[in-house]
Length: 164
Image (cartoon, rainbow, N blue to C red):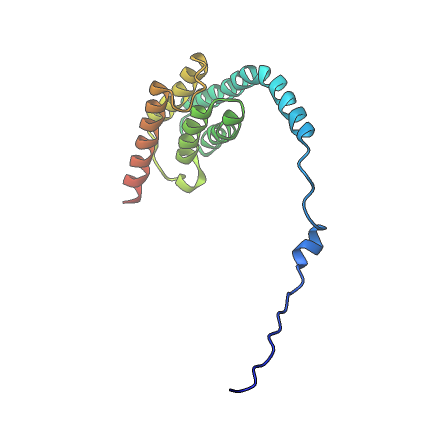
């Protein structure tokens, strides 16, 4: 039998570990507890904050309704819907996030040439109003989830029809 060559194992240096500075430190459970307590304290203000954001959305809708679909009114409505899309889940209103996500798709630059029925935009605004008024915080609320799904479906249908 031929003479076998010795096996040599090469371990390349872990450059990521060197750059990061070694192993990750242990998670500080006390820091997490402090953060959760601070968030719980802030959560008392979430209802007020969502009401303020709703007021801004309604003002943008009123301007859109009064002046018509112009690039300026559409942009303002888009900004308000986009802001709420991000803030609402943080404030404990995930359905508002869904509704505003649908609304911000309609009003985005991507669909600038889309002729949006004002009634569809109004339905989005009214849905947000209803969710805030009903203090609906569950993502699976039967009426709220159905409403959000219907608005998403109508938005998708309008966008798909325009693309065809």
